[in-house]
Length: 301
Image (cartoon, rainbow, N blue to C red; front, top):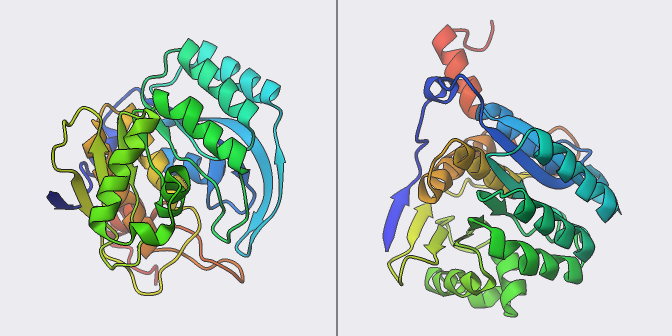
């Protein structure tokens, strides 16, 4: 098993060196609290130097305390947004997040196939950070059924993987069990599966990457340091959108996952408490640290 610590594959200057921005599309729900969903994805795209576009699948009322209400956007409007963006602007890569209905999942799959969007990251969102059901069982399974076969990368967490495989989360407690789960998830059709380890009970925060074409080769194990007491809204969205941005730039899947792991680690370490509940990721953390250091501004005093 390859065991790697994550490091960002390019510094800020290298990310800014491309004169024509790559195009990345997020297809997800709106998060009024600004940490996750469309808002979090677009922040991530901006930080990583890609031109961000969006298709809104649902409007939610959310804040640091959790989600209070979800209103799905009609499949017709979802399809119209996709047609509008892809027919004119195109996309070098796309990612999906919250998909609230089976019909929306089918409409998204049809549009992505029709326009030939091949670099697709599918984050099969089911619950918000506080456990609010953002997608029902039917929509969740439809996301896997329609979109995993189109995906270059699927990024489920442990609860989502357990739900797709019909097992208990406790059955995935060990790294070995999660490796086998990731391999089993390839049967849904994605070319790569990265099973995120943030929900696991161990301290390694090990994300496990397997590929359908690997022929049973050892998986790539991306370890991170679990920060004591650290928790923030939007980590899963940030990982998928960072991987999408990296793939839009032409990075392969392992390199994109390394980049995403490092990006989320920096944003999580700098998370900020803005309300009475769960802190929010600081998406600009890695860039701000560099810029403030270079300018010798320090704390501004």
